[in-house]
Image (cartoon, rainbow over all chains, first blue to last red; front, side, top):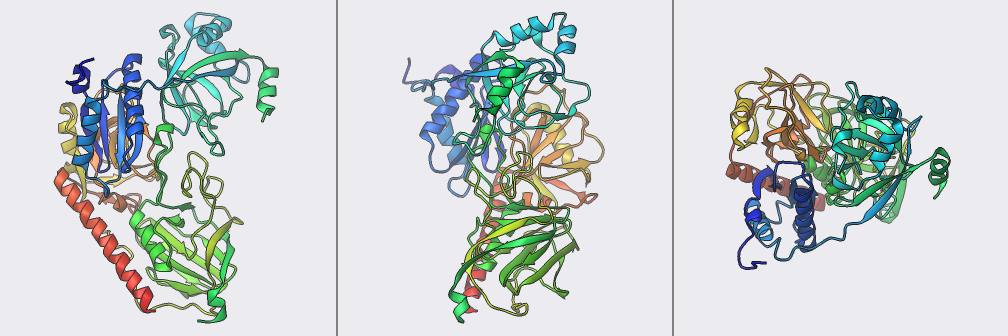
Length: 238
Length: 328
């Protein structure tokens, strides 16, 4: 490691003003697991160093936002500090221990009303779609759209499905869905346009827990197919 | 001071009629955006904080934010209240109440009617609204469904707990002869200042935002203000989702901009034309459906100067209120 000079990749980080109280740091412009891992490593580093004026670090696919208290530090000083952190990000890159979380999913039927149509569109049987959706590890690329909603990268590209032409007005909480080249889980009932393949009995978001979101950005996720009985049992569990 | 003045007390205000959209807000929650949780908070933090100052609360105590028309509330015992923001037809048992000063009310029904101008008002009650603190804030997250009263707008019959406060004793409204300007930071004629995107692909589109007047679409809410006008040419879709913030000016494919407000989602995929500066963002809380808005570009130095000026005005009014309260 060349500790003395910044890595070339860090020099490429673009800074953009996001608001009076926020900088956007862009590491790239694509959905790419390596890029996303660097975003999470940088986010972890900023959180570890967190000065008192740092309000929020928000990782996305290839960028992250840093919110600061504009009356505790001015934008230029915040930018200079962030720039220094970026330049040293590789020298002391923390390797956040990625958690692995298993998500039980009841596929099809009332749990996944789009399973059959989606399988037909992909030219496979529902069983094959379930197997291919649940045999991979996914990464929580970011959380957004709604509290606790994970955007999971790592979907088999052959399972990519366009969003519904007309979004549903009501999607059940826990619905596991495909939207474009991504898969995700709806934490709360509400509208949504992704294809619903199944549902998990786990609570994705609960403000009564110490960690309100079951998933954190950077976590690894794997789906485990379950049947209706196990769904009922897990849902009833405390 | 009578004997009653020294007693610490609590009570519940009963919601008689909720108004179209009334909810509990404080200055918002920080530190949770990475989990998709918006900052939230009163759309005009200075107004909410000054309403609190008028009744002797702290800046961040919870207040009621109401929209287009206020709620009717039954006070179970005498309470000190203050109103800030848009001017509404406030009455207590038929008697008209003025805004922007501390008013001692006896038990009875406080009715906050329609707005004479603007959209949003804030009601502070001495002791603060003592709904549960969720993730560090009492703000209602309407989309997340938590905070405030069960994460939703008020309904008739709801009980709003009032935090510990010194009991007062009065049989009729006591209205002081002094007040502050309830809309101190609102010049309705001044254009809204924004910092335009410097991305080469967006620079020209961003500059066009200031070349026409925009009308506020009725579908606007605390998440975003939707603007109608001659559509701008949106860049090709498929942009990667990136973080957004209150003030971000988004341009969806239909070419009609959306300015994100306090309940902004945390990430978005639309093109970002720039952002409305912090000093002018509270004014958008008062933009009525169909109101005409003019935008004007400014630079980072002007944005910082405007933010300092707004903060100084807030601080000056707070000191003036504290001095007045000491003399009372």
